[in-house]
Length: 123
Image (cartoon, rainbow, N blue to C red):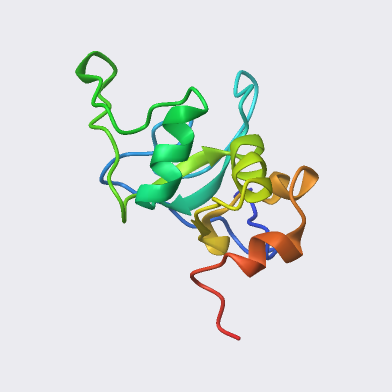
């Protein structure tokens, strides 16, 4: 049975280039071992990437040993839901792709907050 997104439909891929997700399959799936809950598909901004680096999670610097190219503004990435909430509280939250955000994200972030930052909401 496919995972569901925060809208209750089938979870869609977040990004294949760069390959994202805890399981590096392009989806913001979660499961045993994903202690960070990489469930929010976000579109990176320069402001968020700087905020994240200052908070101790440098997503800018490539790490070839982990096949991580480093992120740039516009890239989509499965972000830890707690980091997204932290950024939200600091006024630095990146935009969210709801169709690609795992339903478990609403255990930590309200659907209204996620919708307020949505890039793929039709209404």
